[in-house]
Image (cartoon, helix red, strand yellow):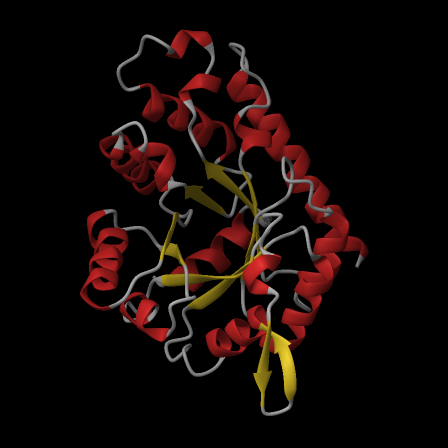
Amino acid sequence: MSFQDKLQHSWQQNNSLLCVGLDPNPLLFPEHFHNIDNAIFEFNKAIIDATCDLVCAYKPQIAYFAAHAAEDQLAQTITYIQQYHPQIPIILDAKRGDIGSTAAKYAEEAFVRYNVDAVTINPYMGFDSVEPFIAYKDKGSILLCRTSNSSAADIQDLAIATEKGVEPLFKRVAKLASGKWNTHNNCLLVLGATEPQQMAEIREIVGDMVFLVPGIGAQGGDLEAMLKAGLRGDGKGLIVSSSRSVLYASQGADFAEAARAAALNLRDQINRYRQLR
């Protein structure tokens, strides 16, 4: 099953556009994890089991594992989802961006070593940095387009010349990703929730392409405005990612229950706005 098919199934099965980002920070774990050798995996496992019927995807962020030399626990986390919740797609948040044989190895890392369903990549070195990923036809390549960080405008909003005048660089990325680069229909875009007007403009350009949307929760994105700007006509088309506000809803013994409550609340908020549009 392709990533797009798997995503469509999970959207429908769990009635959810919510993606929980797995950004494990041992400093924020409940106290009883502090003396556990496999703490990152055990924490992730508890979060996954508490939220698996509420999400459309999980998104482990590779840096949070690599910083602790915990790539083995990343692999454990991925294997656990695949074994016990195989219907839920896994997005590796790696933001790889290189060219040639190096890009090919990054693609191999994501799709062969970890066997995830999709990966985030940085296209700002051009097609050379994208091609090795999209060659995996059944996998998703999620290209950074207009991100949610406060300094994104430094580069992504720069005006560039076109045949019709000028446009911001992020629109050029959107056009390439939805057009000549998307030969296998497996490209998606990262669009931050903090800029709904720009999201609406991109939706006009790319049609029904799927957006991965960070920036809800800790980054302060406007959920209602984002959904109004980004939802497709079928009420889908978005993977709304939340990490810290779910993972660390509590740092006590009730952390898993609190994570579930936070995920349920966010899933239901999203669905209410979907019904009102």
